[in-house]
Image (spheres, rainbow, N blue to C red):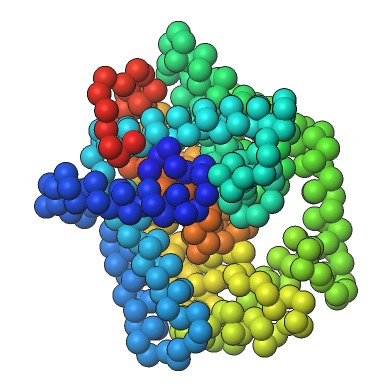
Length: 396
């Protein structure tokens, strides 16, 4: 599934089904289950499912109840599957992701040189627009930071390749996928990686952190595409805060209204929420027809809070962030990359529907979980993942 992450959501679903089939075919289900039970996400995922199931059982039914329940099941199933991978399978998933990254970078380069015709296969890679292109921008951001963190552990051509791929991913964010979320992730992930690496060296830590922040901000703010979108976003928020009408094309303006109305929903029913699938119905009742077409609040914690109360939102947070303390406690590359990946997900969850929306959630959730799965392994697994493979593997 690693190779399919940059491709359209239909291929992501196909790869997801193939992953399930491959794991069932390979067997060792008892060993996989025991491994899964040792993960810090195991009990939070059961609590998340249990609370959601209780709300589903006792709450009202809406037009979106079934689809929302299936999305929740898909989120948990992905977590269980990836955290049940063996270390070797996770290594092959990383190799598949790197191969997909290489192909994506080549497509962007080809598009910039000669211009590719519109195609559902590569439009979300070479043109910015829609949630799948946002997902690809976030994956590029994670790949860029991860590559720069891995590079010092590599030697020779492998190190050069890691740096080249990182710079290529940053180049895509500068020239093609102008995502404000992706640049925020680069900033947060780079800062977290520096803090993790230099935690015992306070002066160097502060200096390196300041340099990383300054470089990220300067690159982002000096890029016309990113700079213009940031200025536009601030103007949209100011207008929405002042009570002006928000159009469906106002990205940050509509987010302001989404957060405002969804927080009202949570405030009115903080314990159990309005029921699974209720957000869409409540949203349509609270806004005019021009905004009623929005089908998610662009923040998964608010999404769960509105439908399953504050406990639902907190259980979602606990489930996705459960591996963060263990990764932070490790003083090696595996722990560092685990921290970076989980913080990437948390930023994406707070600014977009990064799990609820399968266009983002299938690919990003898979990659983040692979990074977390390897955060429990020796750092040599990462050098192994980027070395020349010696045999084929279906789970790549």
